[in-house]
Amino acid sequence: MESARWYPRLYRDMKTALFVCGCIIAAVIVFFSQSNDAALKRRILPWYLLGIDAAGIAFVWVTEHSLGLVFLAIPCLVVITALNMKLIKFCDQCGKTVQGWWCVEPLICPRCGADLP
Ligand SMILES: [Zn+2]
Image: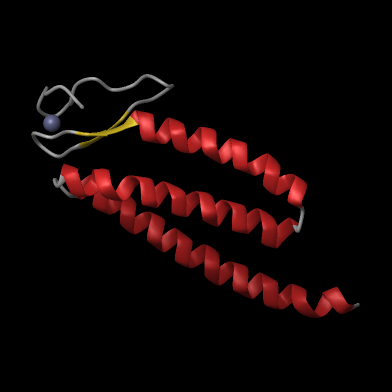
């Protein structure tokens, strides 16, 4: 019955952590969609993705306490992060965030037609 006491606390802490993570993710998504500063967005993106990876690993560890699942999650997160790094581009001319879909890297900006770096 020891675990019955910490489950409500874990549930409350997880709700708070998920709410904070959701707010941070929403703020970054709004920033990426509204800001025209491509250089700043390019600097923030890797840290944002690493933060999401760390939160994902922490979520797996806190909820499951399984090293096997953590070691299963790590390669999945590495692949997802690498794809996001490859598929999310920022236009140097207009600053638009352009995301490729279905593993197709965007080559030109849909807003201004400039080549994407
Ligand atoms: Zn553009």
